[in-house]
Length: 561
Image (tube, rainbow, N blue to C red; front, side, top):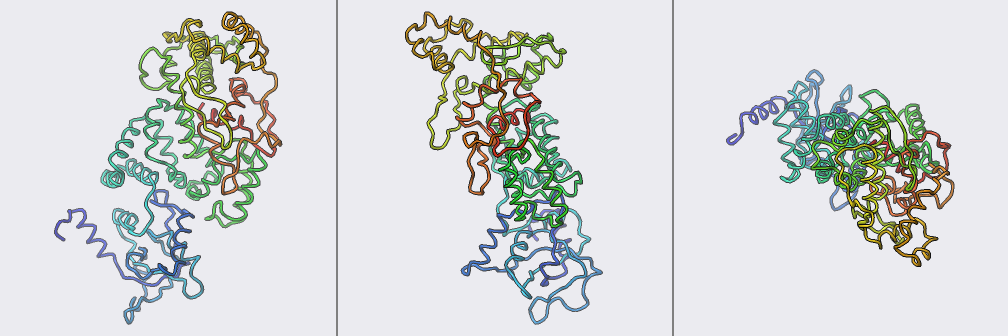
């Protein structure tokens, strides 16, 4: 025992005292502990991986190897009077009730699919159920043959340990990450408490966490948008609770594969999405742990009533990629380095005036009067929407490229939109806003010409003939243009209204349902990304075949704002 710490020695002694022996246990008598803080939740992909190993004749299922045994808790009163091992072989134990195993869930699930008849057993190492919580945690975590933990699983355990004040366990899980990832975690933990409260509230939904990649934490830290991120994560929880119900004991039933299949769908508006969900529920790929048909029917009904894009931690991380270039844009009109969050900084600069200039199109706006607090709320969102429409031209970050299509929205810095942004901020009574490109004539005339050509292609020949001397008159004409009168659609039955393609699972490609927009979506929607369209409540919400790209972008904005 030389080299063991006092704590390790104490754990070793308690394990030795509590160990009863090893037996064959019927697979149907083994059950996994369904605790919110469990290190692992059911992952059907991992079950399939193990089943493939079992079926491979060159490898096979080595269930007698001591490394593959599963630790099981049993009351001493339930022990049989006969020996547990006879003639150097394990004896079969048939308990009166199923017994909890502390790790090895996936190999047991794979074994249930692999073994038939009297061969449906596994070797269990029995421990007395009066073990301390510390030793139980050691047994839960010590699994030499399990698949590598995801970053998200590790972060979840770090947060559980932090909340419980278990410093030793927290440091143990931090040590599973590289030095750089540990630094990312600690930087993220510097975000405001409200953000962590919203993320910690998702701990019971273990199936959402494997999507987390620690490398994305640097982006989250640099956004300076904790209020927006908090709102998004709260909406994730509200969505999950609506789907599975308010009983916290059921929240773990949203497994990783169910979260993967549901995220990005909008079954309440898209008939294609609804058909996909119905098919996957019928095949039991969704919520495989729920066997009761009545409960499954109720869950399906709730899912099919959701008229917004279903979001998860994965879509949250992807959607912050759309926020990222826009935060860089908004920071540049501030008078100095952002202190605290963007929302706090803009609120501090707001003069409290009730009048707000609300853009209705690129060339028209309305002066509206609100209460002081609501005026600030509206003015802030108007600035965000301008940045979301023109981030390629203002930040240089390109939209996603559509497969098999030419890019129509090439990134490149264009002064006219910076002029518009700073003018809009100043017009909405923000103090000390930087007046970028104060003189419109200071902007390169070729860029102004390109702007005119893009906005009104039919005038290209006129622009070429009259050139710069009439550019400003032409721009003045735009200001008298009519606002868009046709409201955008949320759904469509037209093939050309479909914003996405199917992935290998037969579901809409998730890259079209979250994250930085594709070139085609940005081009189609930029004329609709205005306050009135985003917050209108008068849309036709009758389900149709496809969800439009505008509906996806609108829900993205609602999730953060």
